Amino acid sequence: YGHSFVHVSRLDYAVKWEGPLYDVKGEPPDETQRVIGRYVGELIEDGATLQLGIGAIPDAALQTLTDRRDLGIHSEMFSDGVIDLVERGVITGARKTRDRGKMVACFLMGSRRLMDFIDDNPMVKMYPVTYTNDPQIVRQFDHFVSVNSALQVDLTGQVCAESIGTLQYSGVGGQMDFMRGAALAPHGRAILALSATARAPKTSAGTPPSKYALTPVDGQISRIVPTLMPGAAVTTTRAHVQYVVTEYGTALLLGLSLAERARSLINIAAPQFREQLERAAYDLHLFS
Image 1 (cartoon, rainbow, N blue to C red):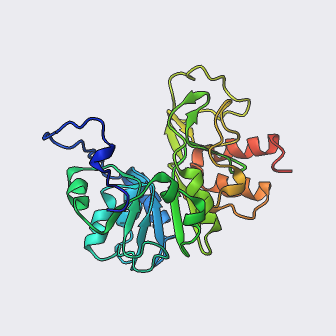
Image 2 (cartoon, rainbow, N blue to C red):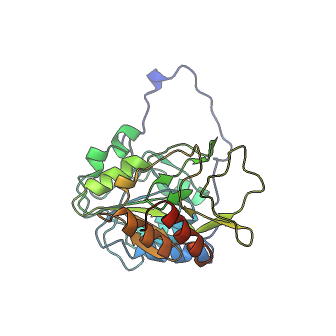
């Protein structure tokens, strides 16, 4: 439904395929991801319209929303996590400003259960990315909640979600479209959710270490960092970041000074890295 139909006259060649559909079976959230999901869920109110990506953290957040009412979906994509909430009557789209009663996406990725759910389902409408990701469309939803992820967040709030230093890790995706659209919505919330640590790499992948790089602890590195890695892409600028969530809590950066931002982010970093982060904040003249 939506704009997902292509007239046969527009096809040069067609190949009939009767094999199984390609599907992706996600892993269940671990304890860290479930904690992050709970913090994210606390920021989602009845009637909100959601944009969620793929992965364990969005699914963990959805699992906390069973007591909400009339949630909606307007997203670049969605996955299996929404199905249970539709079946429970939680996701209805009844309060959406646009496409009321419909779940809107540009593409889908998930298991065979998801494919069966969307098959000939008039509740699901597929639209081009020029519609789903348009910030001027997104801002029209009164309570729009955007949930995205990041690889690193520095102490001023700059976000890298696409590279590890100079090594390209993923595409830009729709993060900035939805972060901006949510920020412009009357009661919107733009959320970045990530685990506070990651496994320390064995090599630097050709990227020289930053002057302010933190020392790994027990084979882990902090994803809250003094500065982004040299050459890292800034996916979302610090001026557009609102909420940052880790398993250690939620930091609301909107309207804060650089010093207040640094303090808020240190408070949600892994405890074993907070002393290093505080020293770096002084070295960077964020603290006086």
